[in-house]
Length: 202
Image (cartoon, rainbow, N blue to C red):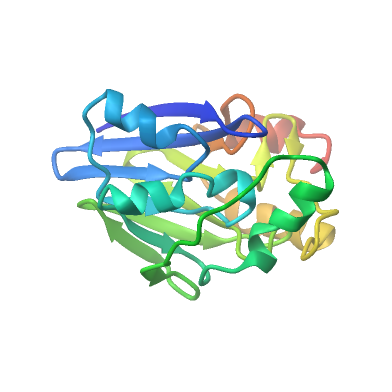
């Protein structure tokens, strides 16, 4: 298994590509990730969305056009994408509609591209926030729940600060310390490092 990343889009969002013998899975779809895949001659089998905020779905429709099946907690919704919020900030955001092929609300795991991911629903940054865990690889794709030294913003519509903190403690901090956390923004970290030193969770 090989994991690579692409950072791009209007607010420099991280997307990740998981390549295995069985296929190619993309985690989140920041702007430019479709072109990134094409330059590497990779065809995405699946797109897993940690949540639908605009910066994580800029290239979702483009990946669907390339053949990716889209997995997300909830159906496509402008209330989740927050594109109107982005435009009020002056960001040039136009998100092409896309179809969520498989909804993951209530699911504990999902197989995509021949790889099985464990799922944790951790709302608070967004109502639809989910994390994807590869236990055998010791890797968590956390979206905007947990960052190196920080946590996801909770001042957006649908945000809930206490709920996010409770979810991180109950569902993420129960993972082994060496688990790598690949977040939606900024550098990667580990569960152990954040449990020991994250100022929002001390």
